[in-house]
Length: 248
Image (cartoon, rainbow, N blue to C red; front, top):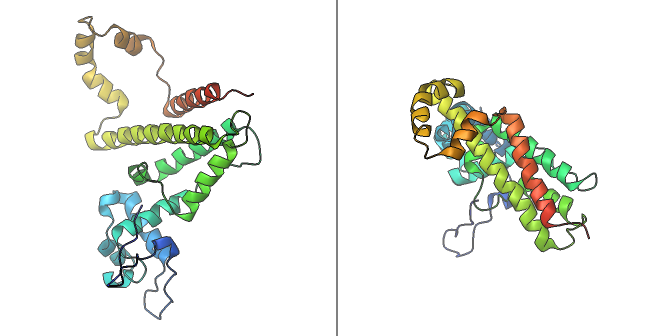
């Protein structure tokens, strides 16, 4: 989240990107808008990660001079804020009006994961301070409203940790899954190939007897596919939240 900055000499903070109006269009061989700039940046990030995104590279993709972009945004951080909100615009918001709060948050978590798998760089920008773009705020409002007023959640102080617990699980699970995908590309080995390569070492370590529970997990536990594993972890979180806030 990009903070407001002092302007040139007045001491007043510059409005955040969300409150600054779109500059008026000007005749140009390559017309610009914030939407076009963000779309180009998202395409660069989808192809080559966040390190491929700079105002210079975005301008080149739009066949425009870099200085023209500064009419629409001031910093790369503002561009990242806009990109994050563009991804939120692809995610259906929870429906506060219908169904069980667990079903609504489960659907939201699944949809967010799918968006992150389409835009892997999105995971790098999750966490930390809340995103303040209009689509991000709409999702947070819908998630809070979905829980607030449900049986056991009349108090807003019960709602916040419930929603934030789901968010924390979601962020951690997404980052772990995308880290595994990136490792496959970096090493050239998928999970099965990596397990085959490291298996002999792990077996020697387990044979020492120092890791009996880990040995049982490796040898006896089921190892589900990513979709199943994500849903199972999410159900544990949701059931735990429900147990902490029983219906009165």
